[in-house]
Length: 499
Image (cartoon, rainbow, N blue to C red; front, top):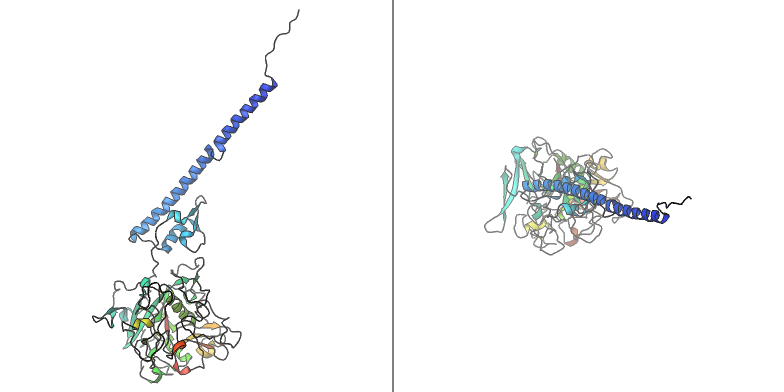
């Protein structure tokens, strides 16, 4: 008789349970390996963190090397260059607010996580002296006399003096050139970028010095056009320009109008001299251009000399309104905690260069620029190291006119804006500023600092800047430019040098 034998096997339920258990184990294994906190992810994170830490450490070593060379300091430009060697920076205005996207690994690292120190002030590049006649060029500084009432000038220094300039404290670089009994004093205006004012209310303009190798402005900034090849009509990318410290005077300043309409006279730039006025703009343009000729004050130099343009005037005016000028709370003219400062009028009824009244607005009782009490208050820095006569004194023609007038007025080719700023205007209304240029300190600072403002038009096609010696609103440093045809007899001019 056949018997049915028991057969042992896996039931369906057991199989299902086994599969479930295996799936659970697999899930645990996968979570352990690949989950958010899994071994693989943790390993990847650890690798990323290690690579980021390595990049940060490498950058920080570079920063430390730079700081070691500069007594523990590092300036923004140098820090920026070091960071850009490792990737691309985002565009926030302040460097320490930016993010570095690294070339290696495409990581995003906050700059503040790399460098959390304090950036040193950015100082301008040393002024370019190579193109001057070194035998007749001197560094200029001033010392207070023992009685502290006047400054004593030191203008025969052939070696760079200690602390020759200190822009943080309103001390701009000054030099003197001389030849055949002629003298001229110059002030260096370094290349900078700035935040263009958007309000008619006077305030400190944010300025940052840069080198000519930086051709693109930082986010929120504009490189002043006086220093860019495109903005200055082809004079080149410039580290800065030399600006006449005073209004132009002639080699016979005792003559009527300080020289008058005589193109055979030679230009000087000196204080306490009658400014050169009543000269046609074409002749003023001519005498400025030939200053490097034999027998002139710049003989033997290869700098470019020309009549100051409107944008170059603006470059000085804007720097003056920054932390490096009269808005510097450390300046003689400043008072800590005070927001607004003014440049005192040159109120000399004799149009003496470098003069200042005994009050910020008016008075024909004038003192010299070297007077230690009020003298520096007429400069763009509130110190004796600034540019003088930009408020009050004689009106100054600048090489700027309506487009199409440049040949008739200045003798340059039509369309040439290398030596003449060209403007268009839609009406003959003095209040029309639609043709203003960024950087010329006309529309940008219109109405600031007691200023009178009018724009060029077809009736008066040439800009005049500065102001007369008369009372009150006839003077200021920013946007006041009456044009040819109004009190022409009192108009002078100023010179600029491009190294």
